[in-house]
Image 1 (cartoon, rainbow, N blue to C red):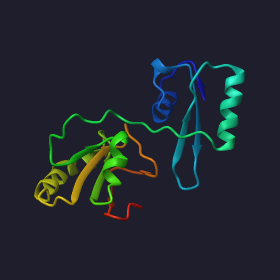
Image 2 (cartoon, rainbow, N blue to C red):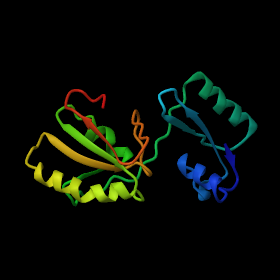
Image 3 (cartoon, rainbow, N blue to C red):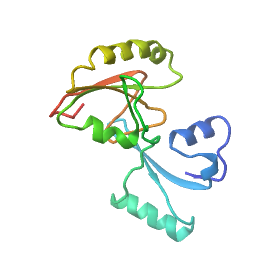
Image 4 (cartoon, one colour):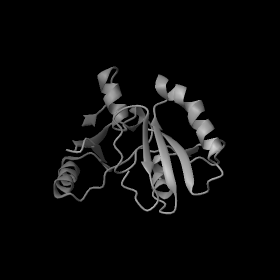
Length: 166
């Protein structure tokens, strides 16, 4: 997708979904839905020229591009019992083979997620004594992680120690 301006309506929503902000235009992305339901996104970097675009598409076709995942910055501190995950911290926390990890994937605008939040915090507080268990959540509208496909909100996934298939 080449965008010179992220338009209102559907174009703006699509741009946000694939990680394009108006200040980053013009830009190029390849969006590749997989048979497993995931949507992989590949970001073009560099000058937008015919030669560079041909090379970008060739790398995609050859399977040598790495997908890009959205991520907020890692929180400097964890204020609550629920551990806040972002795309950049997901693997190091969730894939720790010594920890059982329960993750709620939420959307800030989701009513069910808002209703669940105090109950989930209460659960995390009651189970905080278990040092082998992490109760976490991640804003899935602003963060993504490799191998995680969230189809609705809230989605809760359990990643047991030594078995991180989820």
